[in-house]
Image (cartoon, rainbow, N blue to C red):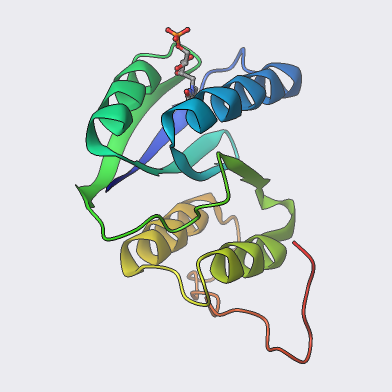
Length: 152
Ligand SMILES: Cc1cc2nc3c(=O)[nH]c(=O)nc-3n(C[C@H](O)[C@H](O)[C@H](O)COP(=O)(O)O)c2cc1C
C-alpha cells in the first residue's frame, strides 16, 4: 500500500461540469483498481491524496500527471503506508467553501486523526489559498467531539 500526495493548478478550461465528469470517471476507475483518496479544489488549485497498491497507484498517477486538464503537478509525498486512510472513499471531493466541514469529514473518515503527511499538505495547501492579510494559523485538525457529531 502506497500514498501519493500532489498539488497542481487547474486548467482554465476546466469548468464545474467538466470537473464533475472527471470525478465521476475517476471514482469508477478507482473502484476498479482499489484506489481511494480525496481531491480538494481551492482557488484554481488541486490537492489530491491517492492511495492504493503500488503498481495500480503508479499507473493511475502517470495518467493523472499527464492529464492536460491541470498542470504544474508537484508531488509532495510518495511513500509506502500501512493502510488506506480513507478506505471508503473512491475519490471524495471537497472545495473550500466549508473548510471546517471538510476537516471534520476527513478526520473522522481517517479514524479520528489524519496522518501527519496529509495534515501538513492540507495546511500548506489551504495557507497558499488564504487571502487573509494575517499569517495562516493552522486550524485544529481534530474530529468533532462526540457530543456534537456532524454528518459528512
Ligand atoms: C486533478 C485530477 C485528478 C484526477 N484523479 C483521478 C483519479 O483519482 N483516478 C483516475 O482514474 N483518474 C483521475 N483523473 C483522470 C486521469 O487523468 C485520466 O483522465 C484517467 O485516468 C483516464 O485516462 P484514460 O482515458 O487514458 O484511461 C484525474 C484528473 C485530474 C485532472
